Amino acid sequence: MTAMMFIVMVIAILLCVPIGIVLLMSASIPGLIDSTFVVNLEYLFRNTVQAFNNFSLIAIPLFILSGVLMARGQISKKIYDIFAYFIGSLPGGMPSAVVITCLFYGAISGSGPATTAAVGAMTIPMLVSMGYDLTFSAALVAVAGGLGVIIPPSIPFIMYADSSGVSVGAMFIAGVLPGFLIGALLIIYVVFYCVRHGEDKKKIKGVVDGLRKDGFLKVFRSSFWAILSPVIVLGGIYSGFVTPTEAACISVLYAAIVSLLIYRTIKISELPAVLLESIRTLCPCIVIVGAAAIFAKVITLLRIPQAVVEALGGVAENRILLLLLINVILLIAGCLIDTGAAVLIMTPILLPVVKLVGMDPVHFGIMMIVNLSIGFVTPPVGMNLFVAASLTNLKPMAIAKQAVPLLIMFAIALLLVTYIPAISLTL
Image 1 (cartoon, rainbow, N blue to C red):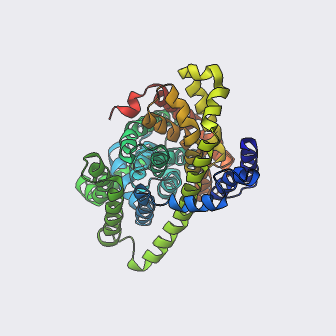
Image 2: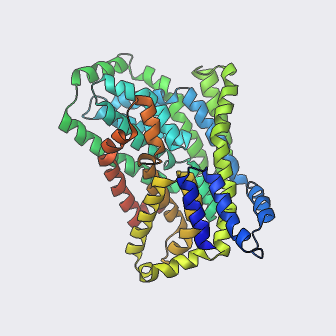
Image 3: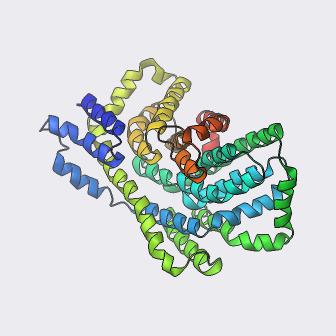
């Protein structure tokens, strides 16, 4: 039954069947083969719907709605301006400001593709106008956009917490240092690239001077409300004043007030379109969450995690080799499956395995998300690649080739996160 279930899954994925449907199809196979198996079709659909009865999952649609409001409200430009004001004149300063903007915008959107789209639509044309290579600019935004799922609030973090039973707040706190580590490594490469290939200092000076001529106070006032958004959301969670779900409610309210009343970049007449875009983003996520819950149940009943441990044999006794092997598995999964779906599929299989070597579930969750976020920029799925390609009319593979050095820096961060638990667990 197990072999048939995964054969059906692989074939369906190759045929580009939606992941939620793939999981439901795979979970139904054991019941169709063996009528005595507890997960029959009635059980499958009843428990799929029941999986939605989870308070923490309410945060997913709310953070999606908040991210759409902020994107349409052009918040990314406000964030970029303040960082470009300070570091724009330094070597690699303007593209480095893109990385920092992705860090902060990730604390608003919780999504890699959303971060890539919102930041890229504004910064890629600006970087090209200053003389930076178009392919490099697109690759930078695509890779840095992956920070959107590492810096909290992160939708994959919520999905992992739901699958593993760990606290959403613990995942959010644990993601801060890894996110800043990755951002720092990306900036190191950006500075190296710019020093090696040179920059058009005259054009850069013109843009930076344009920001600075109005003075710091004007730029700060313009960017203040945008930067304050992640401070309010994350500060409320970390202080214990609100739960992650309550913070999601605050995030939506704050995004609406800032976009509608303060910056006035969204009109009330546009709200139906905002809600429709949010629903289109949400529906696939919710189907996957429900389907993954029953898929995890089937995996447990078939004792697949125990079979994985037995198959690994002596490797399971070597922590270093085991974690390296799991990273390889997750890298491959990230190339083929959407990040959220990969989290929900792989967590019930791999979490029991890493627990055997004493790995903290929160640490494993951070390692998994960092790993899978590389998949945003790796074919054939690579959602950030396609978003960046749509913004630039470049071919996704051309962007992927340019992104290789940046992904190497991402991989270095992954190894550090994997083998140094303190990076994830200190806070």
